[in-house]
Image (cartoon, rainbow, N blue to C red; front, side, top):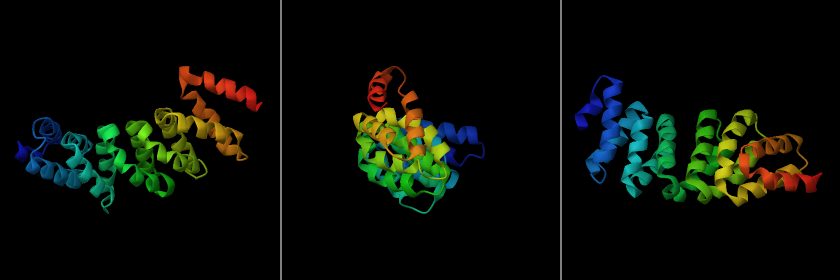
Length: 196
């Protein structure tokens, strides 16, 4: 199966990466082949397959995040998202990507990844709120709307604090974030009534 990662047709290589993640977990040579493939092809499918390796896949993803290969860093975020809560130890690596990253796509993916990790990624909330002040704000806001509701009570508190703040743009973005809570917005209406 490993030679199929070298096949000249993308459909075959992606299928091989997906299959290897399902049947090859626990085999170091498969993990190494997937990592090499990610560096070569920046494959999101291979990155998600790497999550099947649990702690070893997490370690590989963190190493990619710390590296210089921009495509591999982006792919590593797919691995972390696929790991979900299991990737909580990588949350400190997401904060600078959200707070300072010049690469809009990487910043957006880091915000989305935090949502997949869930409440254990609540440490990114100040970085997301700070990103509302950046030039990339409209793009960041769209990703934050999917992530903030998944981060639990601390995200709700940050949104309400943003609504009370003096920065008009942050207040506007926080009001927009309330829409992402859909049916759970009763809390927002109660708090908005108190603010008004």
